[in-house]
Image 1 (cartoon, rainbow, N blue to C red):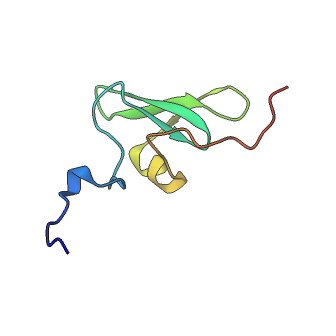
Image 2 (cartoon, rainbow, N blue to C red):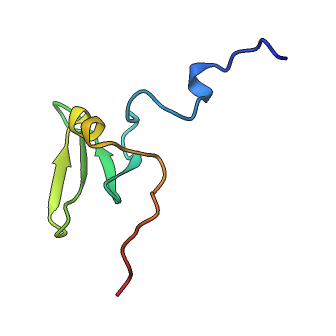
Length: 77
């Protein structure tokens, strides 16, 4: 039995969204890109109707996000 611990940077569950500009994450089945603004960084993507949508880090964390796209249950038309 090993007594080694895995450093936090190597775990599969990150504590917060990435902070590097142009990073891409998935939220609600849609991609969001981190745009570095003059005041605060914001996540830019689209809503369910294709309209532009911006989210703060807190909003993104509340909605749930991932580095990988989740499998969609919707059928392609």
